[in-house]
Length: 148
Image (cartoon, rainbow, N blue to C red; front, side, top):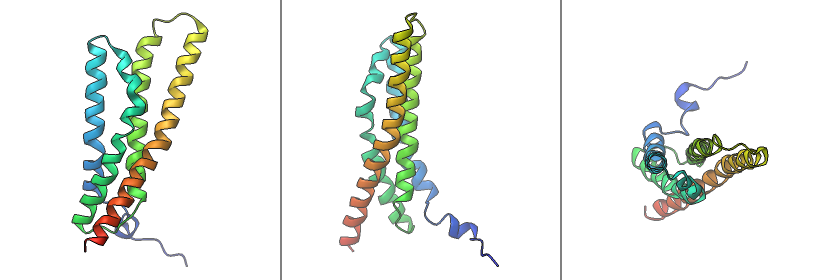
């Protein structure tokens, strides 16, 4: 007879409100920056995407602090998921900005370069942001545990 986890046990590694409050603010800030830059005709602002990956440092620490205050069990899986979604969101914004530039391009080699760059930014964000988020969450959890 197999034992299925209860919904509360299955979700004990994720604190929903902390998750949302760690993911949305940096994603909204970066979305605003990219969309305003595109509206002003400067889609190259999306080229700062690797710099935007550093927002995952804030997200990891934010999740760890809020989850600790709510009494959630310390986990690094949730900050990794926050980082993954943040990285994919940032990469998606880069893809949107690149599409706006590439749409006017007619040379096939330039279109291929743009697609390759989008893939690099999506994969880079999907790797870098979870790592940065987990590192900061781990550091914050250690600091909070030492303070008790």
